[in-house]
Length: 138
Image (cartoon, rainbow, N blue to C red; front, side, top):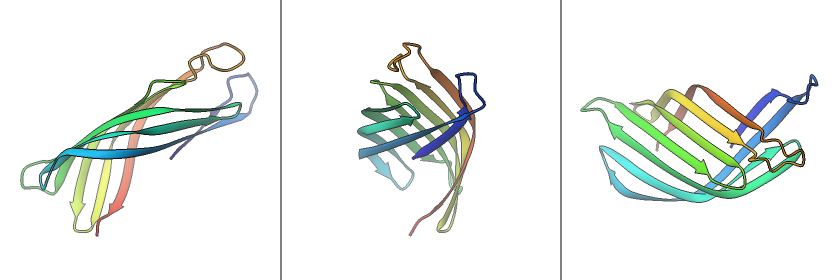
């Protein structure tokens, strides 16, 4: 689940809130102590003030250890081809500190309603910036 708040594009001082949800089934064709490659498929939805879009979602991710260190390289891409367009990419670094995992890197998200709203205008946004995460493994 991701949430986005941005200025409304209708000229008002309002704030539009977008919510992105997805659920995937995954398979990992390669998985070892040194890394893994995962393929995902499922559904994704985008909830905007005037519309809700639901479509198929596909993703792939890779995590690989950097030598004998506690650091991993991570990359992930997710795409929704229709009815809306969504591409979510991230690349970063993770450090494993016992049961604690810290993650950080860069994320880019492209969203477009593909002209599906009643006004016939294509509303598209590109968001890009750093991300941080915390995880526990047990």
